[in-house]
Length: 457
Image 1 (cartoon, rainbow, N blue to C red):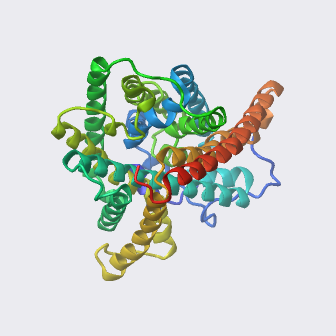
Image 2: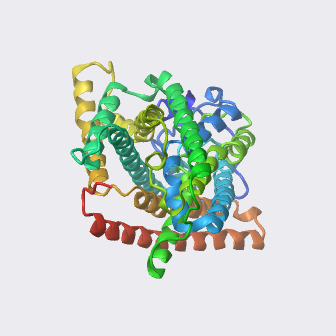
Image 3: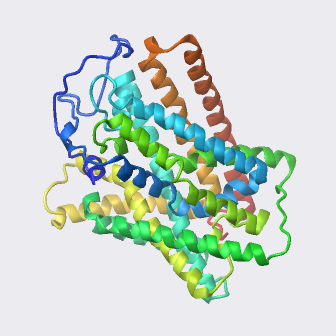
């Protein structure tokens, strides 16, 4: 896949002749892009993915193992009405925000293959650096969440066969971190994943189908459930704000330009088709798992749905193992931008099996994942991490920055009403980002006191 070439940094330098858009940013702004002397872009001839291929990639991304957590982390604190309305609104505003970014992909007559390149071109070097930092903070927290999920999946298998407390969640998180590190060391770059990407899709289908089937059976057989929102009035306010951050986290990765860089011409039109596919057909599995899970178990739904379902041991084991394996692969994909940056920075070239290269991967990738694993074991609160990720990176990257960049880039082409609309979005989502960050930090502090650090939950 071409996205693999991009994340590895195998760009071609090409000169693209195009007239500057009338609404381009002020000429006094110093535009900046990575390796801008010469600036690097992929030639149009290398963009070969159809809109359906890209739409499928986006759909697979939002239906990762995280979908097993939305019933407990989002529906429980919101309830039926706010939960359903919230998911629909989050879908709509995510489609809108991503469409703004997609429409800027060829801004200035060239294709911007990284989010930070686009921000640097519109604003200058400082915005490039800030966007780079936000992206990598975003990916770090997503990967920490994946390790928590992997640990929960392993523990779910363990409790099916052992009814004791000998092995606690932090132990399984540590095991998951080791497995992820071994996978990262053994897979030197994304192009080596190939067959694993197919397995990832298969694993996703397995745990989604099993989770829905067992939840439906439990819901039919179970007595009336309690759907009341737990907590005091104060705690409900903070959990509601945190759940709002979870909603936007569910649909966004902060990597849309990197994915769009693989789309064939006409790039904007095809990317819009991919986004329409993602936010229509693609969200159906996520909706199904989330709503069916909450319907079946109510306010008692676990933050890892497979902990709530009942059924044959072997079926639950297969689902949990599939979730664990999919998480290992997905983490590697989301960690790859960091691996690519470090490999490029330290000029890692040649055979992946060369002693120097192998030693580098063991030390650097192993060290990076060790930090991820430590944080995951220290604070294994999946919902809180999702809220914090949504607050500090998803809101700023996908909503605040997207609206403001579009406003700056298209300023001369927008009516006063349109400008006011984008400024309203910037202000509203900026406030939401701050409120969600405070709520997420409070939730982490409260859960740390309730369960202690390195909690077994």
